[in-house]
Length: 324
Image (cartoon, rainbow, N blue to C red; front, top):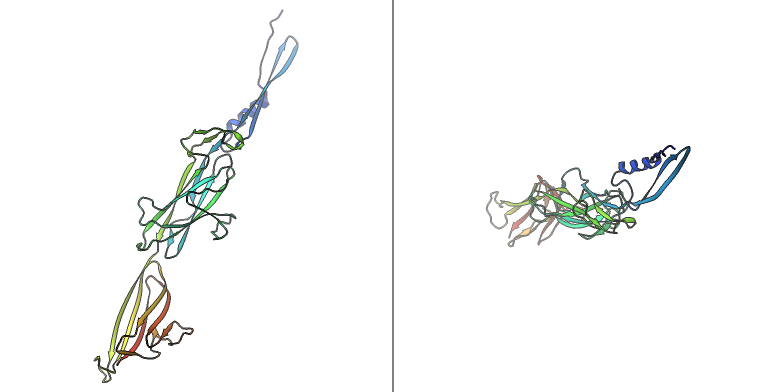
């Protein structure tokens, strides 16, 4: 009697399934997915061949907690007297749906100034443009909505320039995103908290990542200089009654920014009388009345509206009075 020769072989299908699991990226198989596998074997005893199947094993894929953060600005964003908007992208690089807390820190070591954070908002319609009243505002330390695996959110940070900041000073604003489920050293596990009921496991990013946006101050400083010239009734320059005094006021802005809402205002000095319609802006006459030009004047004083004045430029206002 020949001894039975028994040979066992894992089926080609089972082997292919096993290899495909090993080749998948960590975030490639969705958390909660059930991976099932059944082995088979064939054997012979004499002329007969028998095929049998093993029990089916089921593996539930745990959720991997990973995140990436990047700045979407091409370089330092100029920050002048108004607001500037920094733009960041938060990517859920894990394999399950996850929300992320957002923390913004404008006080980064080495800053030339610390910007003042006004608003943090999530791009609600995905158009990449900050839209007040449309985008979802969150508090510092608040969370995004749950992001699908491999999904992302665009985060806007609206900042203003602190008073007294020097022109061309630089600053960074750091945005940190952390998985709401938890973070820690890679491999840290949160039992039963993964999507689909499995565990949540911290990935290589520690489920916590950050990126910094850059700012450069675009500030302007205004200098105001006043001078006068006198012409007396006798053709000289003596300050006698009846002499005409021409006052010259120059506003000069320096720096890379722009001065906004600039008015040049001066009261008519006591002991003198305003010369009607004598106000000029850069040599061009202005009327005293409140009308379409930039000047308003009366016996009490003058007010000339300059508006915006860019650094490196100047405007000059003149007006006349007579000594009583």
